[in-house]
Length: 464
Image (cartoon, rainbow, N blue to C red; front, side):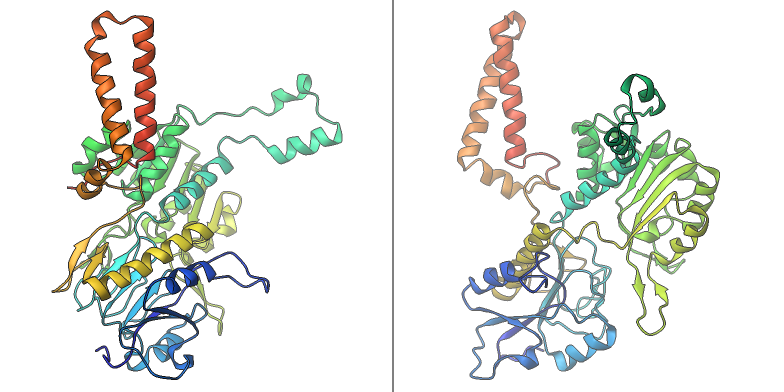
């Protein structure tokens, strides 16, 4: 348990900044300044054993930045004898034996790498400390990377080839343009599997391109999905039917005791892929295990799937070179399908500097909330006794809490919203006798209302 005669120690195991300093090293200075700006908080480079010696103030919270420690052996040595009380991590896998009696935060949504027995492992079930995450903090970054993947293969206008030929003077619009037909994504179907923070952001981008967006989710989401202008699908096969693109955002789900694997393992199977249009695009920027790699191999061979882009963790042994992790089953597919397959090292959500910094700052706040206020923000799994719960996501991402909804109406934005709604009500009362000027005012107010709701983050479902 925590030694009350020393400061509370928080271990940070991953990069908290992807901008670079004068020496070309990742620079954590933004998060360091944030921590040092909070009363009673101290930032250290390196482990607790390297901290300056001297009188210890038990009321302080000390953050130890060790982003280059990642192997199981290194972590077990670093965390020996309960050296740290809390943890902030992103991608580093935390062994069960590493204890953090006050809790841990995973920067991002998935917590499968948070293996400490302090909170019962990656699902947060059991244990005596809270497991938390930062849902929504990287949702837009991930969704934008999904969309970059879509646009890299659809539409298929070869920009580099056309640029080269124009530069060389070998392209005549009148004679050669017909040799480069393309198609727009507008009107094509996008299947989004999952209505979480990332899935919803991907769907919104599809809608911006006027795609027909179909979302598979639990039935309780149907009303909100349809309210946002998407099509609700009761099954994954229904969502995938005649789709040109499928994007997966479900998470692994709880452990399936019978199979001994997470419940959603292999959920994207032969039935799902065969329901899509021939030559369609599969994007999995969630967890590699969600797609059955053998089924994907067959779909690539038949042409049912024209392109697949997979973003999954991959680990390479420094001693043997052996490759493990969710990416491993996809690597053999490259031999026959390299031109159809793009493999990424689970980088889409974690390589954006502002997102990484924002997530780290939020994680700091969450750790301090547990330590100082006994409130667990965005708890995953079980909530230990003696803690209150609260949720938080960036404005406009995910669900809206009643507390936040009420607080908006206490600001100037809320006053503007009430004024616009009142104007709309007045204009609608005259709907039966609309003239051009009234119609113009009504359309302006409708557009202003949509813009203001976006500005205030009032899009999407309210929490149950």
